[in-house]
Picture 1 (cartoon, rainbow, N blue to C red):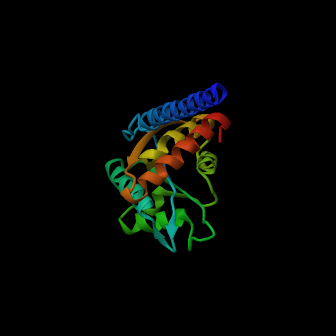
Picture 2 (cartoon, rainbow, N blue to C red; picture 1 turned 45 degrees about the vertical axis):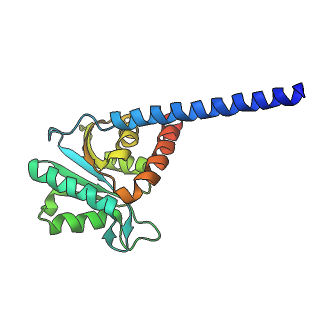
Length: 196
């Protein structure tokens, strides 16, 4: 009887510790995500990268549309900033994310001369690595335009590549908030531990 009771107590303690660890990780990653939304860009950096998101056929997903809306606002407010459109083409996408962004921005009045295309990347790490390769050697700073939840990880990866960053924050569509919130927290932990 005592042995059974001890087993139950140990199990309860183990479950309690797991729950507490989970809560601590949730709070910690939430703070990282909040910290990732600073500093807000002021147009002082010459280059800004728009990080790609899903394209449905040839149409930007809602996440990508929100990023493009913020990019348009930023481009209009800061006409000297050059925009790098970063995103390759997935197997279920009709065109690259970069091409979808180019079409959207030019249709909304952004001069094509302000745009640099990076259409080979398949991950956030590659977005930033390939973008860095497109920057002049003397440039080590960059504005990142992406969804609110995504900025902390993007900034961490950029820092690891030697880039100083500020951000333009796009909202996350309500329809994907819960999924992205969990997915991004896991990806952020992986990035903090493994670097990519």
